[in-house]
Length: 90
Image (cartoon, rainbow, N blue to C red; front, side, top):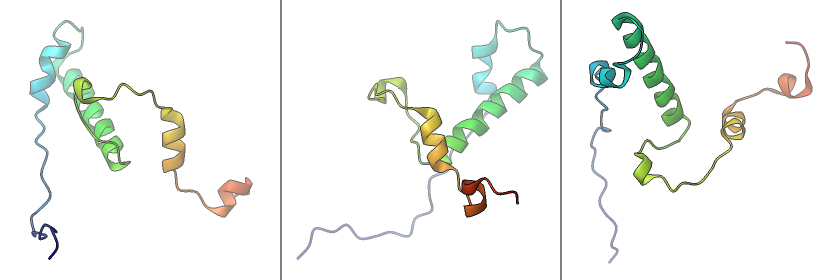
């Protein structure tokens, strides 16, 4: 007998995002509300890009405090062809 947990066909969890929840963080900025919304939504897209790269989203308290080389991590995530690696023109 094994202790395996049966796989359930559950949909992946969804992340709710409401840009207005982040407005208090920009209360003292000189940005218009439209600029604040654009900024917050852009930051959210960046967060999602990191999640797509395999990073986990957590609070600073959950972080191990370990320094990472962000440039190296992003370079590893780039898909390249033989032409790009050799510097050949496409």
